[in-house]
Amino acid sequence: MLFSIFFSKDLLVLDGLSYIQMIDLYWTVIPVLLVHFFGSHPDAEYNSWRSTVVVVLTWVWAIRLTHNYFRREKWQWGAREDWRFADMAQQHGQNWWWVSFFGVYLIQQVFLFGVCLPLYFVHSVNKPLNIWDVTALVVCVCGIVYAYFADTQLHAFVSKNEKLKEEGKAMVPNLEEGLWYYSRHPNYFGEQLWWWGLAIFGWNLGGRWVFVGALINTLCLAYVTTLVEKRMLKQEYRVDAYKMYQETTSVWVPWFKSSPKLLPKEKDS
Image 1 (cartoon, helix red, strand yellow):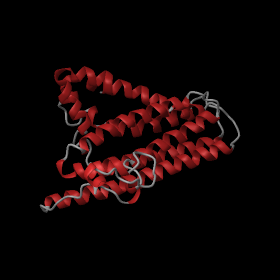
Image 2 (cartoon, rainbow, N blue to C red):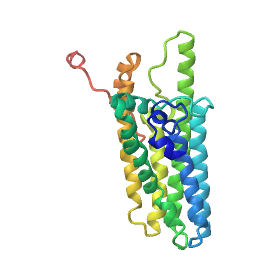
Image 3 (cartoon, helix red, strand yellow):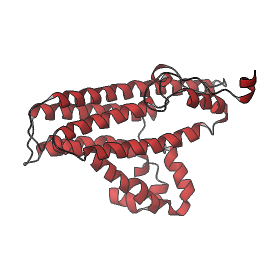
Image 4 (cartoon, one colour):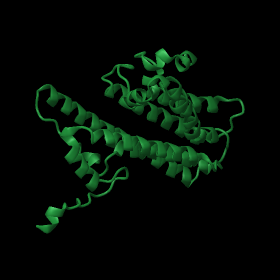
């Protein structure tokens, strides 16, 4: 089925339930399958406590991400296309079917392989637990919890604005409460914490290159961040407010507000 989706231009561009709209769910399923595959392999060798912790963490992370996907999509599966893919499809036109295959779908398999490498090391090395396992556990849990609350606050904000729009009232330009007061993208920050925490598990077991996957994921999120912010600045009702938000609020890492830059007229006065 996946091959028919990959190589069919009609499915990639037109089908409402195509792979292009289910990539988020794909990301939540593969790590869970991989952690069980590595753990159940005949040649697997691991510390049972570490394995149990990592398996549980992977399941909790996947459930959180899946729940957020369905909540965001109003509990429907593949009901709408991600605006980023829609923009790229419009940009590349007739070439989108092959550009998407190599530049979106195929490359994501590489990303998944990279970020899931720690799951392999966890089930390849039998080493007693140490302080780095505790550190990795704390980072992973903080990432999952932080991303959950950030996404929940975002969902409440979006739902409120949708209701205001239906009632013909002015929408609120920005979400600047809760975690979003200290960071413009706290959900991305939480997601990065999860992958870096997972990488610590692998590094502790001798996986010297496991941080590469987390780094690539961070670079991808950096690119996505620029796309999101450009889109925000295209919406007239929030342009000025969002520019101010950019000046005063940290991009990812939670931090205190900074003072906005003064305009020339304000400096003179």
